[in-house]
Length: 161
Ligand SMILES: [Cu+2]
Image 1 (cartoon, protein in one colour):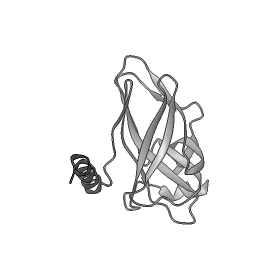
Image 2: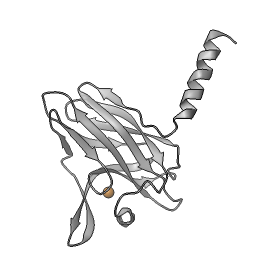
Image 3: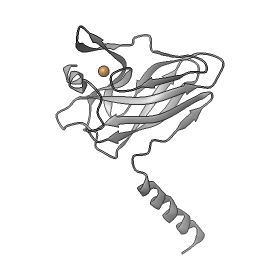
């Protein structure tokens, strides 16, 4: 075995050992962690995406939009309780990422919404998503698809888009 093929074998082994581990992505002063999404049923046309964004800089940034080849549209949403009912609303001005803070997009709160899924999201998939920030510009991340049991509240409401 040559040195190069041995390296390739090691890379394959380590990739297989951590299929669901989300990779941290650093872009300028932004660190993006734990990007994940949830498995979808074949008939499901929407899905949620979650991640945490840390701004290590001294200047605020803003997540303004996102795109992905797996969906016709990607929106930024928030979810909140309204008279005992979970409601989602589009964040038309984006999501502020204050200086020195971490903003978490997670089930039951802020999230990325895949609309018009072109194919189901399967466990183990790594969904490419291009995030666009007001200052930092475009940042490419991958959302790791988790089993449906990795659940948050009111996921059924996602079906109402
Ligand atoms: Cu949503």
